[in-house]
Length: 287
Image: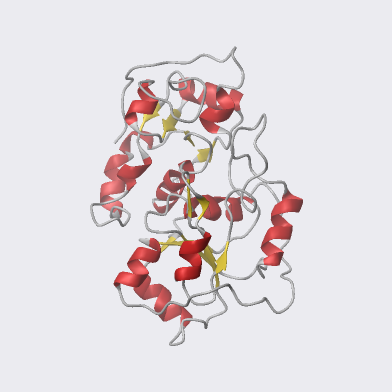
């Protein structure tokens, strides 16, 4: 069943128009979500240049709870997320645009968490900071300006569908469960982050990176529809290593009007219980 199609993406030109000539207008909250597995929060990159007025958001502290039974990047509590968003000046009626360095694979996590906690108007800058700079759009350097007064964001969970580990295992049998990790990790040939290699039995592989065209932007809708033709009319869930990059595929599906449920703990939660089954090798692939 298709949901109403509301494009969760925004291009550089549309964002510049929305913000106005000084790139600060329009009452839009910009969130910079640059982060990497190697370095964590890319604070130095932010200080060296960011969209004017953007607030620096930390994946590990603002968008995740501490690692534990829920995996390496559990969804934060409503209280913690509400506090973080208020600190950045967010409100429930404030339009938000999130971005990362380029691919959107980290910023999509911010998009998903905001949507999950009740923010209806969130979009991801397609191509991220790289596309913004390439277009010659204005940037600023240094730390963010102080926010005048705290935001009034109220975090209410439940705005996006989620899967428990048990739900994910069942969906792999009865619907479509998409594993968004690179193929070698899916097949169990390598596992750089978690103690067990492989995938949830019955899951199909559709690497997050293949949501993007060679330009680094999201594939056009017709190509995404072809890529995800196998999920049409079926219940679909998505997981990755720890719930960071899978939202990128949830977003791609949402751009087509297809609701996708996220298994937030993903593989890092699945393998914490040694009684859960693990498959290796290839199963039918997606896309």
